[in-house]
Length: 418
Image (cartoon, rainbow, N blue to C red; front, side):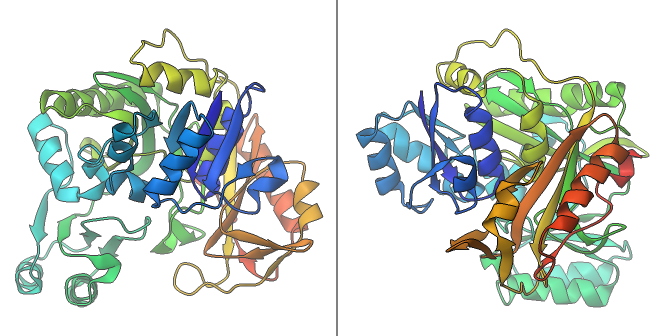
């Protein structure tokens, strides 16, 4: 099959590499990045929101189907655009993508489905938000931008002063182009991610993963787009996993269908195990990043055949996942990320080509024989091993060999599973 993957990050790199496991597939990535070329991925210089050029490429090159990686083109309606051109594309349509595009839309869906989540209030006016904050003593409190913020739109405010600063940034300064905020109770517990392939009423869960969002070791500092991940999650029991599928995933998919939203694509549930049970932190309308980079390497079934079946609404009889060991990935990011990234050389590209571990590339550029940083998150290095400790040893030994001048990474990814 000929397949087009839309996006430019490490998640899309992982999707491409999973699709390339079938040697009969020809995989293109648009726009991709220079690092992907090191593993033989064909990159196409079309921006992810240029729907017309993207669709024209799919038509001209007889693409069998397109896979959408990032959330922005989904929320902007790329699936609807492709379908009007009679092109097969894997992802939810614009209406369904609101599960990520609007937190209030999703909160209401969860309420209708009886799915447990944090109590919340929503505000479009700064005055109303400030009045609410002054009336509450429930700190810490969570403040979320109601829209897309590349994983950086969630803030935990420990007091009234920081909460006031955050809502002012969002509603007065319109950080992330925010027009509405959700203020909700702070939930304590163990966080984990549950993703699933969804075909209208049918869904196929993936193994659990755990993302490390904070910039610093020990889960300190501001949220990022993700500093690393592990799959499976050893400190979440199989009983809890089954409960999450039955009490969150199943009723949410059913509620979408019952409300006339025929969801096709990936559904991501960010969950937390609290003292009162499982609660939903968020839903996303696509593969998680960096969870995808550690989940898809464990897939033993043919990803392209699975997606083709879903697009044709054919039931998948079985999906094989690796059962032994685990996969652990660590993101190397630019120094100064997530506030002000420092750009510079990442070293000779041959150091990357000769690495013994799998690397998924994100914001990198190639100039002659070197790779350079071109954003915040640069590349994720991941290993498969029988234990967390062995996986950590493999990854950190290889990361130490890389040029350290302009990169930073957490040194405790996987700590929750030890």
